[in-house]
Image (cartoon, rainbow, N blue to C red):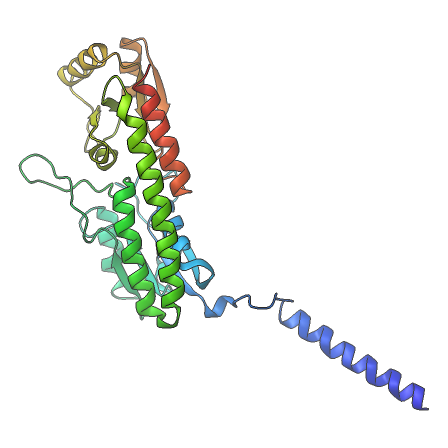
Length: 295
């Protein structure tokens, strides 16, 4: 009878342990539960790496805008608005920069609870239209601007999760070092190009151009096609600067870019301002632009 009792006791203990494992998801020691993480919404996939690099395993990130959508005309669905409203923080690009963001924030005022909306362009020196007009909204397309954004992200995460301050600050410093390293590398790569002019379909790369003393010429702006005279001027510059590459974006028609490329016996390549994998994409963008200046 002793043996039978011992066997029953062992069976009960094993069953309890098995049940506990199933209910707990067999989590590894030290792995945080989803309920303990901050839920963070961002506007663009390009922002996701910035937030994850600072927040690490203390955050879950929700991206609002699909990568193939035009940020100038995007309208979020009701389900997307609900996801943002349930977040702890929403990192927007910046007030007044992307019109749909302003509409999102306005709508959130009536449905969100304790959501903290953070303007990640705060502290960035804007590029404006001649005469002090509208600001260029593509602030994230600069490694130096991204450093400012990372500081803002870190501060906001700490405000919602003070116990993680040391963790967030350490992550921020490590990622900032990576941003600065790539920035220095790109600046060096552009030191010996034969022209400092590049031609794009849509003027998304002004901040990138400013960082490295380059000139961005564009075919389309504000959703309007270039005039015949504009195209003639761009073609003339391309020929004089020996430019053979016109850059388009996957979010917009390539028709204008293809037209100019044909006139200069050149080709069209794609630069994606919305791509995930921020550092890798910025490195790729720099390489494509630099290569176009050395043809």
